[in-house]
Amino acid sequence: MTSNKIIGIDLGTTTSCVAVLDDKNTPKTLVAADGERTTPSWVAWTAAGQVTVGTRARRQAVTNPSATVYGAKRLIGRKVNAEDVAWFARLAPFRIVAAPNGDAWVRVHGLPISPQEIAAHVLRRMRQVAEEAIGEPVTRAVVTVPAYFDDAQRQATRDAGQIAGLDIIRILNEPTAAALAYGVHRHAEGRRLIAVFDLGGGTFDISIMSVDNGIFEVLATGGDTALGGEDWDRRLQERIVDEVFDAHRIDLTGIPMAMSRLREACEAAKKTLSVENETVIQLPFLANDQHGAPINYEKPITRAIVEQLTQDLIDRLEAPCSRALADAGLADVEEVLLVGGMTRWPAVQATVERIFKMKPSKGANPDEVVALGAAAYAGILAGDTDDAALLDVTPHDLGIKVGDSGFSVVIPRNSMLPVRARKLFATTAADQKFVSIDVYQGESDTLGKNRKLGQVVLDDLPAGPAGSIRVELVMTVDVESLLSVTARELKSGREASVTIRPSGGLSQREVVEIINRRRQESSVAGKLPEGDGNIVRVATREQPVIKPDDEG
Image 1 (cartoon, rainbow, N blue to C red):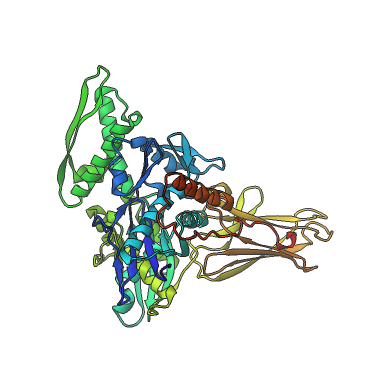
Image 2: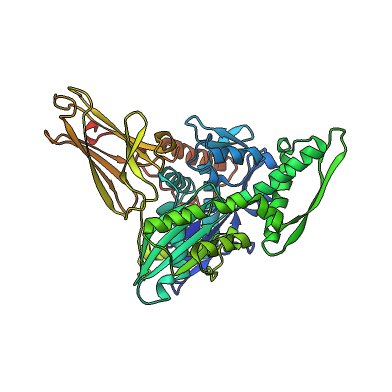
């Protein structure tokens, strides 16, 4: 029997968490059998192909570094040539490689693995924790993502859920989930303006919201999907790598075991320095020098040194906040909520206070609050509670290609959902037979820096001089962020339309192949995967669907 419970999952870069509504309709974090309230988002493979997830995987990081993967959320729905992906690859002890379509994948024991499949292992572990705590099978979930994730990253997250045997009934923005968990809609009468500042392990989000009588209206979002606590760790790593090279002429980046130990030590030092002013990094036998002698690294490190190394990261927090306030048409807010483990860093808190001119609220555990909010929203969707409603916005500009490389915005970012916009344009050549409209998402005036979503083609246009045939373009985005595009020639009324279902990088066939392969591997091993005693529900629609309806 399958449970009617809908769980809430925070699929984090560093750690993940699962929650559910209890019998009193209060969100609670589900604790694993080993007592863990959060699970490290780490996945490791042995040479025999056995997969471990969470703390057990993280413990293999030193002895099995090239097959122990972390930070997959930074890769999901991303291209391998993206600047921040290349930077991540430089210090990661595992290999990041290009998929045939240019996506960033990971090579483990000679086999390429997609970030979706890696994330699916983490989601499956969250599902297992929930099933053990609830005592019955679970197949439905609300999963959170950064508000600034684009369509491809959101669809890639859905694909990960499908591989994990989960029906993701809603993708929820992390800041909105956090605001729900804080319960800001219950704390005051009348309209209240809040900011949710979410700095986690790998992503940064800022959302400006209006909360009025249980209605959460997102006024503006912003952020940086390539900025998080791991960047602080990496800066310290780079410093030590340079020091060792200068002293011994040994490049640690070519020694996976040394890099794993170094990464772990830098993260531990950062956590200590969030409450202390000084700590010591000790790494005996880190590597061997050119003569075979051991390199023993030991050095005190202060918070001031780390702040000096990461000042540019702190500086990157301000622009998205200022832009979000401007987009919302506000000069200030009434409350700032902190989300994400990196908000424990004193310089981050000081920056928030300087930007918003107030001390932020710290009334919730930043590691669990997003999962609690996801569980609260799951209760709303299930009809268990009805004390809040969410009104969301588009996180990025939507538009079309104009000329050779121009980008014309049709639906501006932070437009309230659902939204519809129209744009008129004319033919550019005499007796033009068709128009091909390329749809893009992004904020850059340069087309190449934005992400192509799809194309709609309107053919059999009537003959006429250049500029005489006019075409109306209509873009619609519904509350599920599904984009529909229609092009209609005004004189004849002929039209073509397309529903653009975003691709997360994997085709539906590839997703099904991964599911089938995993079931076969588990069958050979003599057991079914966790939770797979039930039928895994697989969507039948093909994606992306990018063709006119009249083509069948």
